Image 1: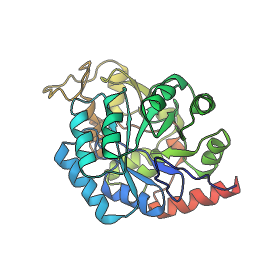
Image 2: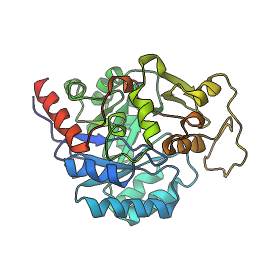
Image 3: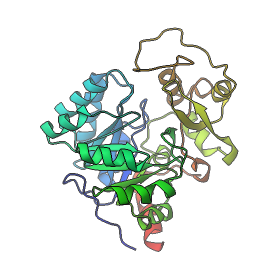
Image 4: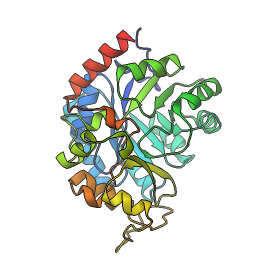
Length: 314
């Protein structure tokens, strides 16, 4: 079996593999550059960053690779427009956006000549994105980590979205190895997005404590929690997640109104920041459904080598 050629607005990576953009400094320049160098598309998690920090991360990544790099940004955050503008000023290769739907971003992308990729969970939204000018869509199923837009499997929504649009469709949710990639390609995907697998890489800069939570995870440790954003989220069960499930999470002491809409049940950005820094008992640890199947930390180059080997065997 051979990899299909993924073409997003004229950008064609060696492999149709996109590293999911994980927010609160999980996906930063070292990981992003390593993925781009290995032949995939590296994506900075822009949500939660000030504009100057995002600008610095893009420049750091550019110094480390000539490959394709993008950003991922939630529409739900208040500084959405400012971060998008910052990325466009830095000539980012492409932008992935989800957790809400922006119509303006497509005109901004056209003005800058930058492809916009919408993260969707239904054929209806995929068709709207294509009509507005999306260069591709990510079909994200319930197996994904972080904020979820559906309770349906990627295996179910992917064929529906593939039939609904003519632009490239990228499968996301629960994909951790080359065999998973092959299954998605057979279902009609032009490429895949993988996030959880790349957390357990040498280049990912999250704390060792965060990575150990992934390595030690069992199937029953993966739970769905409520996020103040107004969406469910998939995470590992720990002390903080247990408090969320019990509706006993600590209320924010200070709120800088980073989200357009927030329940204020707890501060999601602080919780995510705590976990990536190593304060895991006071943080949310987002993860994909199949995190418990990954049992090693490898260099990104080796992860790609294994993915390619497994894919060609499928």
